[in-house]
Image (cartoon, one colour):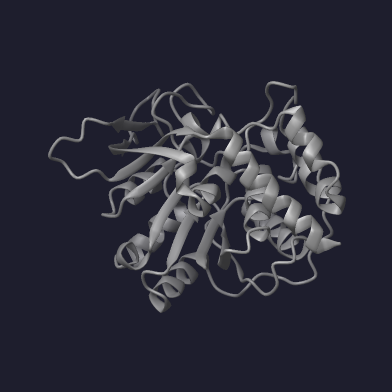
Length: 308
């Protein structure tokens, strides 16, 4: 049984990543923490709560965290995810509220209580993780692994240089990459291969209320779906890596996050020429797309069957 604590900013692709977790019997979800990112913290938390109930995740704690970046102005992506963050998906408002306390404390205490057992999966801005590292540096030792969706070694998406999660809080990202652990980075170079084609959408449509109320309206809102291309479900790649690392090719690298560049702020400057330096990252460079979708859609199909 693999234990995951996911730090997220739902977000369409965050929702699809949580659905992948919910449909994977080999995973135990230790908690969900939220951060301001794709939309404001109030909305990302409300979405996480709604998803917890819709996906039948039980009493998994949902703990809100940081509303904005450590130093910089707020960057949001409502133009991509819609005003609520979940596109055209319309989930019932959650009946239960969030846990008390702050995400940073929850991360520290959860890892402290179960050292070496929990993989951190971070699919939003890295503000909560940076503050956790500053609060308690031993989280680097206590985490089994850290897998993020973010960055790129070739391109940006929010601007030519930077991927959104990195640009949203580059100072936090720099702290996380410099903390002493090895960051498994699922960046745009990999995630832009994980696209929803019309064939994928056809497999989502028969999945009852899971397909009707979440998967299809979320995916279609994200971009135009064709036989050969469509929107990428970035965040699910980070979860898929935890479930089956063999889907990905990863290469050791030294990654530095640009915090001062006029045009390159948030860029993940990736050097594969490690030499005698310590690699601070394992960087995803390719994805077995067919096997990825077999894993993801298989999990969705299993989840839909349990819904009845």
